[in-house]
Image (tube, rainbow, N blue to C red; front, side, top):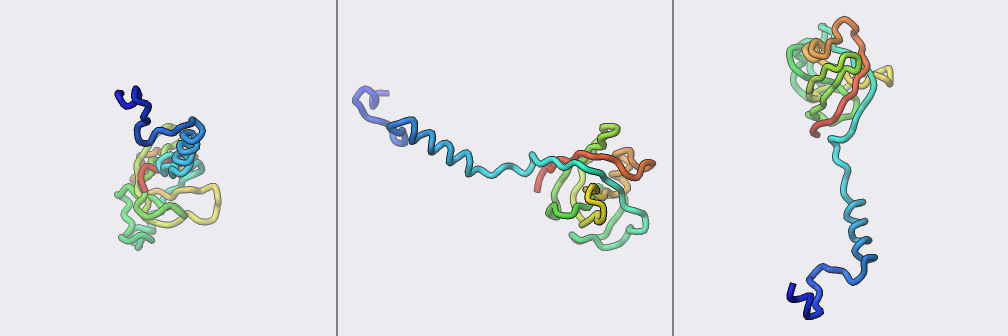
Length: 135
């Protein structure tokens, strides 16, 4: 505090509020928005049993006992929390494949195990909300 009494400014203190606010605005606008805030709404379906053992787009083979999902554009390995909007049940899956294709409202294709935990086996197709946890 003694430097203020002698009329000196500490390093990094601007003379006017205008300069300081401009620097603050640049630093805020330059910060990338975190991916984990992205929410995806749409419908989800689950893989048919005929896909068991087939190669997935991101490597490995599809096993219905794993917590995996397919999405058209999310990077391979992305972790996603999917919530069934009808009953509120939630699962965490990892994107390991591409699809579903056709209907634009379809956002995810989940494994049989994930579908069972979401409570969507009987319905086949349910409205979901998905939150990206980690890319």
